[in-house]
Image 1 (cartoon, rainbow, N blue to C red):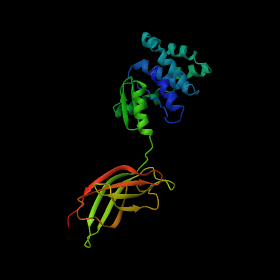
Image 2 (cartoon, rainbow, N blue to C red):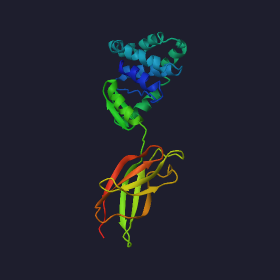
Image 3 (spheres, helix red, strand yellow):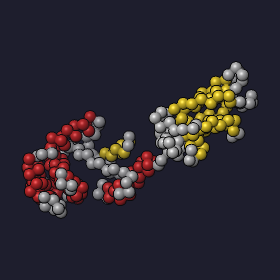
Length: 249
């Protein structure tokens, strides 16, 4: 991750698109505990990421040092971090002031199946292993792309006694605000001819997904299926459509 992490920071963190949070995994006994404590103690002085980077650079030294020498090694690393109060850092390490909190966080992660590294959680997705930046970019970019159109989730056609139809449409537009929202839909036949348009006059930010009914739709007898397409107030018609069979008389 020495090559990938700086690229993620430059491309996504510095531009405000991603918040990077590091969570320790204590799966190498004393080495993991002491390294995590060093980062946490440096973090108390606003130097977490400086120590974090140093620890990754010095991994060969970490593995070459036995458990008994880990504390002295962390103290030596502290000497390399510019602006760090070395006395306060040493006291934090010697008192093991952060260990209980680190162990509690590690235990919580293990209940979610995280007991090794590297594992990356991006939204609801997990990525495993030392992956190239392109693997992260694919997931981040997909999540960061704003939804332009409402999605049609469900359509129910009901034929009334007068031969006209009620169309109950369920839309998903979680981005709704008073300024921009799902403001309607249209019903089309297989050739794209518009049979009816329904307009919504306000947002439904507090009701997602939501269902509304268009009444009095006339569907020609030779039309066997119709497609419903939603409309965004800013971007117009688009999004996921739904095609349903017209109920027979």
